[in-house]
Length: 631
Image (cartoon, rainbow, N blue to C red):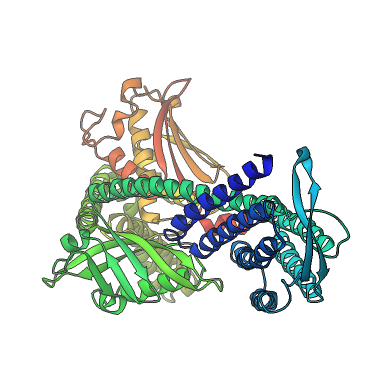
């Protein structure tokens, strides 16, 4: 026994094992072609190795010639299998080239069995033993070369060109996996095939004395391809395991999502734009009713359930998202239930799949039943309207109460012009009774009567404006003019109370947006409160100071007095309804002031002065138009 009789059966056994293994793998995988061809390749290498083993033990020319002719059959199988294995495994070999080589090798196989001793020799004259590694002697032939063997050499060249073309194309893909396959499998096939073909052709030509021992070269190429195929199987197995884990995670996440959607009472929808169908989760059954579970409905049928007044806005938002003008849409609309009622739906969604041209293919989102919230908002708006009406009533009552407090000054304001009118009218009568009458004096008297009448009318106009029971109308208002108007209304009352007022009005103040009469009411309340605060003070301390200023985009109005002041604990409470520091007060004036100022997006507060007394301040924001103009 020598190393050849040990190694070559081992090569054959290994090849048969690989063939059986990949034959089973091939019937279970989607890429079965590569594995079935590899099994054929391995079987061909096994048979080729066994033929070479018998040739090393041949004792006669006839025995060697028989084996040398029939070894071309497994050689044909392994070569053709190697061509198509590379074609399917690399995915880059030319199919036409592969078919051409398959046909060419079939022709060579026919020539092998129809001319001479084989395609390599016309005749074999004798066997001659030669010594190889380890002192082992094997027979080689002295023979006449068959001219057809040149075609076999050409076939090997074409085989190498096919492998080289497929390898280069695979390498040019550029990814790491492709280049590894090209280097390991393609490089091995090219190197080993070139060495094996060269040794065979040189032996056939009688240039070298080397026995037919090429199975180890083909076996090395087989192992290289088998390694990559097995790596693909292992990677596919690992990928399948990962996919299984991922699917399990996905199912778990889906269950969590379902529980979250159920807890949040959200309805999931998925719109297949190509099919025109919309999948709706079973939450829709609860919201709308009358649908099977699960719900699959056409978009056209679903659109008929949307309220006609809401559908245009819904369609516009959907088009914006579908045309990629917006990443997602969010809209509230009504949907008709199967019972004919309308429910409010808050719908959100986004495109989750587009084709290479950007055309939307699939859209998903959630719907929420917000009917209860909408009903609560409607009730809140109704309550707000009722509260606004009550505030208006309260403000009117406050103005009426203030009328009682300033009635004395109003009587004085009206009495003076009315008395002047009476006196002037009597004087005019006397002048007209003279003969001749002094018409120039009469004209002057009549002008005085007109002026006094206008004064009385202005007093009445201001009074009516203050007492009108109307809704809030916001217009541009000059705060300085509001302050001066109130001081003109209060002029007689201030004189009667012996109260002096100092004004520090910042000039050129921007306008605010608000209701002039209501702002007058706030100012009037603060001035009256200031007069009440200094009522018991000495004559020289009966002073009020009114200031206006622009601070951080707001107009601030301050009314300071020199009275006894308000206790620290009452500085905030005085703005609450029915809380007062006056013996005969109702506690509504400052509460109404805070309501009015808050409605004007401002704030009102009180602070004790360092030298005694209290300062009331309120702010109103400057109108946006004024801010834009100043910028």
